Image 1 (spheres, rainbow, N blue to C red):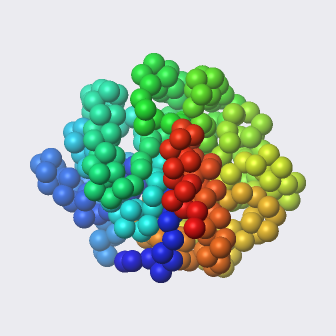
Image 2: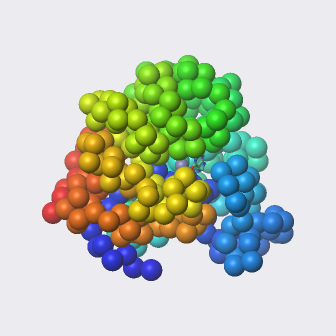
Length: 324
Ligand code: HPA
Ligand code: ZN
């Protein structure tokens, strides 16, 4: 569906595997001679899950349709194409090396396939894509550190940052400080999911113990005025994904979502789609449903590019595109 709000947009919080629409999951399964995992879809043909942990399980089941480097390239191409149709000029995608590693695909081959997908989308739609390497919190600090080591050992021009998703209730940010320190010292931007299913204390710990300039979600910060003040003072940007938060039941509906309260408190926010087909949203829908003026939405698009982990030249070029 064409978004109502036709301004240039950008996105810095979207998960590669979480962007696979059911129709592409079916195509990939067929191409790879796989039967689709049991219980993948509900009666309406949507991904089936009921709460945060069953969402993470459902996400893992979708990942099983990916088998070859080409599959990963096609997924990022397909997402960038649809984001471009929504008006996106830039997408920073969370990509986890865990799945390709489990399939025996080398880090180099996986990145080459993602690069091919990004370049194809760039040629066809003019969109710029970059990669954030993301570790999975519930797999523990050792796996995260190994991932950070692999990432810095093999720099790639499209890999611009490091992040962490997964079950926020497990471990503490400080357990992952060695991994974050390693990538930060090499100049990579850092972000972490926090303040989504766990409250403000999770965000406090993240900004105290990790070298992050952004927080994935962070919406539960709205429960703590001192924390909102701290985020505003330090200019820490929240990667807000209202559709995801409502779908996961953090808030009853978009009216109850704290997006506007965060903005009113001076917290720098961006708008993102997270895992769009899981949460029945798109980047365009997030802009359309935010209940914000076009002026504020343009400010958000601009902030998204500024908070991205892009190199200065590309940032400047894209800022020109989002500035009227
Ligand atoms: N939260 C945590 N981990 C995730 C998410 C999320 O919203 N999406 C994919 N992995
Ligand atoms: Zn996320």
